[in-house]
Image (cartoon, rainbow, N blue to C red; front, side, top):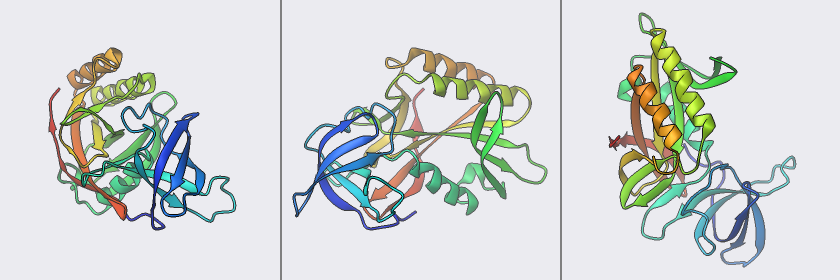
Length: 235
């Protein structure tokens, strides 16, 4: 999935109120405020002075003319910070039937209501196949070299989603917790149990109920983001 417009480099000044980031554009030195489409803590990704990439827009309906898309680690690696992008990239991969665990499914339905006032990220359907309920979580935390972790803050909502998946599994459906790592510097995935023990407990309950765990990484550059290969899971 390519970005709609060419990204521009900048230096992060501060991130605040969760959804706002002040930045200084490279070259012109202009100070601007960008939209940060990430409600999480962004641990390790929002330090002043970091090099970032922004997507400009000329949409008159948008108050902010830039969106924060990437952190540039300046060693050849990137982290995607926009939590909406993984689902768009994953939708394209599912529709193209590029992901082996889901290749047999020919119908992809995003944002389908299910459970108790919830929406599943993707409901996959295919002739003579059990419906597959796929919940997606964007992973950006890495505290140990090469290892991605989730969550980066306490997430009662995430634990609720695991409970909904467990219910689907008990009903005989296929239920999948898919972690999509938005970093190019990780080779394995684990739960950040010390950050949210309740989420880890909910995960194990869901796993025991039959919920599958799958983890993919991504190829990321200032040109775009695409789903790549599967990562090792250490849970």
